Image 1 (cartoon, protein in one colour):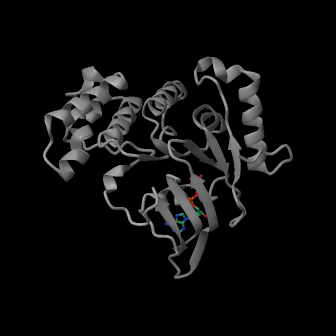
Image 2: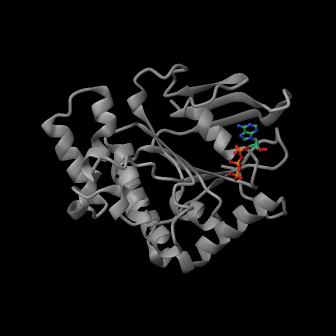
Length: 258
Ligand SMILES: Nc1ncnc2c1ncn2[C@@H]1O[C@H](COP(=O)(O)OP(=O)(O)OP(=O)(O)O)[C@@H](O)[C@H]1O
């Protein structure tokens, strides 16, 4: 069964002047269980709209979206979302921010605390557990936001340009971390990014969207034996990046369908 299935999805936004703007038209995509898939494409092509629709933050005008075969989002803790900004609660310390989604649902147990601590350890922030968000760097805050997303052990992770506000070095570091987390958890991940190299580094598949509304995305399978720093300079990596870029700009030598 597909983890996420977009079936003929059209999304229209209401404009201020009372008209309708079609952001997405007849969009189809099947995200496989456990895969890491990135959405790339020109600004305004509808990437965030796809993600918001999957998260049920907006309802499609027509068509349907099934998460693990279900059209209604029962047990919403199975799906987590990470945005560009970490949006941590300033009055809670790091550990309590991570535990916040648990607290919304039920009493926090000893197991929840242990899981939050394990997540903090995984992202190298054990020492920061009692600190306030404002005392952390942007990269540290985004790591905390990722821990918060993972605390309920979701089946599906939705990420909307989660690293675009970070400096280049921190971004690279956290990308490798995310890939390691994905390999450890095999959580189905739908990831929106503007960065072609980020998409190639992280993804099992890339869906290249077009600025022409209604045009089907081109799918590109990424097969890399390793996802470490060394891979960034390999010919294979740069070939994938070129293909994806060509797909975005509509040039020949576009991505191979997968
Ligand atoms: N709330 C809204 N009301 C009206 N139009 C919107 C709204 N949100 C997005 N749009 C429009 O829908 C289209 C798709 O927007 P979306 O944010 O999904 O694109 P995107 O590919 O994620 O863009 P970017 O790469 O710039 O973040 C754009 O033309 C945008 O202007």
